[in-house]
Image (cartoon, rainbow, N blue to C red; front, top):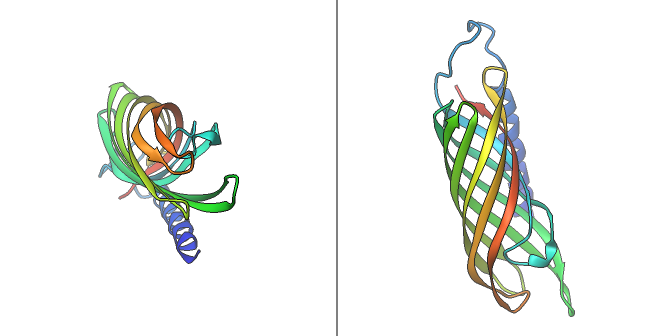
Length: 190
């Protein structure tokens, strides 16, 4: 349990740092370009539960802090690592499942603030019933809304392909695809 609290504390500290860096530099002239492309931020991912525990249906799928490089109107590379846990139950018992995913994404701007993105995810779920890990590949499209000179909001729609893996909860092999909507916030770090 202390590990979950440590993960939550890390996410809160990262978000606080992101807001602190987002403050406008009063000494810089208006319209000053980005000095470095390093970003900090976070993503909320909404989608279906294909993977382990596919019976979870639609809802919040991931919450993850991200760090990366984002060149305005050119492209970006970002890495995110999300953690959460949930309770599941079968006919015999209830059990706690710890979910983690590592995402690596590469995007290219096409028209101004509109971009396409591709990514790879390594997902793990640990529980008393069994541990499982699987890979996901995805493609998507998104757009950016700049807020102030150092921060932005973005929205993305993804198609994700979940590769074949064994689900100990359903006692069968799972594979398939899902649609995911990401809403994110990021700031440039100076």
